[in-house]
Image (tube, rainbow, N blue to C red; front, side, top):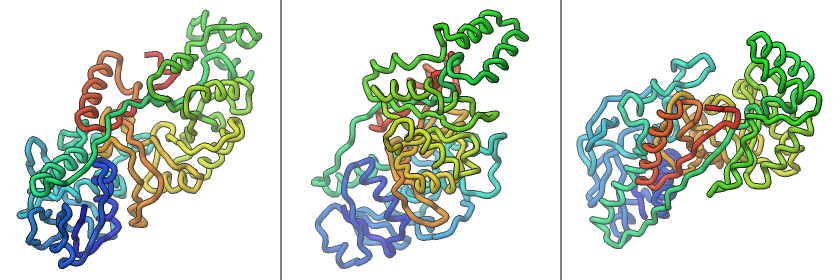
Length: 403
C-alpha cells in the first residue's frame, strides 16, 4: 500500500500505520515523489492539502503537518450517521479521517492545560469529543479503516488486507487481595473496631478468627474460578505502601507471595502502580521491582490504580521502568472506547511529537461503574460493537467488588 503526501511527518507515519497495519493488517509505505506515486501500479492513495489527480485523494487538514499542541476547533460535520469534525470541501470524504484518527488515538484533547479534572485529577468522559458527539461506545477508527478498505477495493480489486478475529480479554485489578487475611495487627484492630461500631458482629468475629490463625471463608478470594477462563487473564497487583487510596496487604507477607504464585499458574501478572504514582512517577519502577522480587520474573504489563494517569508523564515513566504494555486507557466512570479503537497500538508522545514502543491496550468496561443489571446490558452492547469491528474487548473486574 503506497501513500503519497508532500511531507511525511511523524504524525502521518504513525496514523497511517495504525489504521493499515494495526486494524487492516496491511503493510504501508510512503513517498513524497509525485512521479513515483503516479507510475506505481500498486494500491495507493494521496493525502495532501492540494488536489492530486488520482482515484483516491484525501484532502488533508493541518493537524498531521503540525508539531505543536493547539486547542482544536471542533465543528460538527455529518458523515453517514455520525457527527464528526475536521471537515474538508473536496476529496473522497467530507472529513479528514486521518486527522480525526490521530486526534482520537493520541488523546490530543487530554493534553489541554485548561481541562476540567475530577477530584482525583482525571480527565472526564463527559468532556471528551466522542462523548459529546454521541459515539463514545463506537469504534469509529475501525469504521474509518473499513470504509477506506472498501474504497480501495473499488479502485484496486487486487488490494489485499486481513481482518483479525475479535477477542475478549478479562483483566483484574487486585486492589485488596483479601478482606480478612494478610493484614497487619494494627489494620486488624482498626477493622474489628469499625465492624463493632457498625454492629457487624459476624464481620468482627471473622477478623478475630483470622488473626488467631483459623480458616475463614474470605469473600474477596475469587481467584480460583479464573482457571476456567477461555483466554488467559491478566492480574494487575498493587504493591504500594498502605495509604488512604492504596489498601492492599503488604507485599512482604507470605500471604501476598502465596497469592502471586497461585495466580501465576493460570494467568499473566502485571503491576498496578499506586494512586500516587501518577504524580510521583518514581514509584512506578519501585513498585514494579517489588513484584518482580516476589515473582522472580520480569514484569512488562501495567495498569494504573484508579485509572489515574497524566499525558505524557505517566507513560514515559512506564517506558523508563521497562513496561512494554499498558492497560489503563479506559474511562473510570463510563463504559466505552476512550480512543475509539480496540486493538493494541503504540503510544504517541505529543510533547516530543514522536511514536514510542509502549503499546496501549484500550479498556472498554469496568465492573465498578455499573450495577449488575445495567452492566449486563452495556457489556452486551460493547461486545456486539467489538465483534462487528473485529476489535479486542478488554474488561476489568475486581476480586474485591462484590456487586
